[in-house]
Image (cartoon, rainbow, N blue to C red):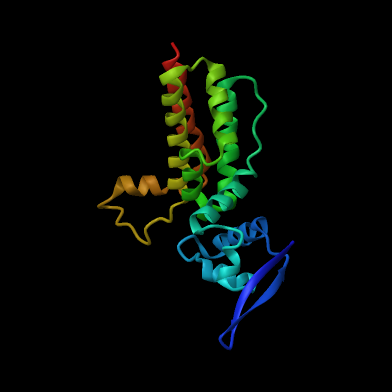
Length: 210
């Protein structure tokens, strides 16, 4: 794809054609930068420098930084293959595991991913989760509450797991914090802790149907 950019030279403006620049290409490069440097370090200027273009050329394709970050989140969401299990509770458990794996491949996007589904940014993903709960018998307000409970737990546990731990902890003064930090991603119990947390939520949803 060709993009027409505007470049100022000696008080005049000339047109420059930029080959290969597109919204998907911009989003992919943005994800690579966030993976490498972290979300806090990400900026449109750094992205433009990585692509070898002026910042203004990016805005031909994306309206602003927030819209681009939604595109980045969608790329990560595309890595989550939806389960095929007909049982609603098995579906939710499988979805949670697949969501966690995708976000762990891109840990700096954890907070972005929470926004993606909590604000209905990815309508297909939201509909799939609602569909699983609907198959389980959730209707009306119970459907909304079930969705919020499952999503809140999933996003919260994954984000907490991927949040950098404090550089040092006084284990004598903070024994419970030490126990919490034992579930950090590098610790063998991280996956078990995640499975247990999601299991508690799904069991709570089962109980709500009785």
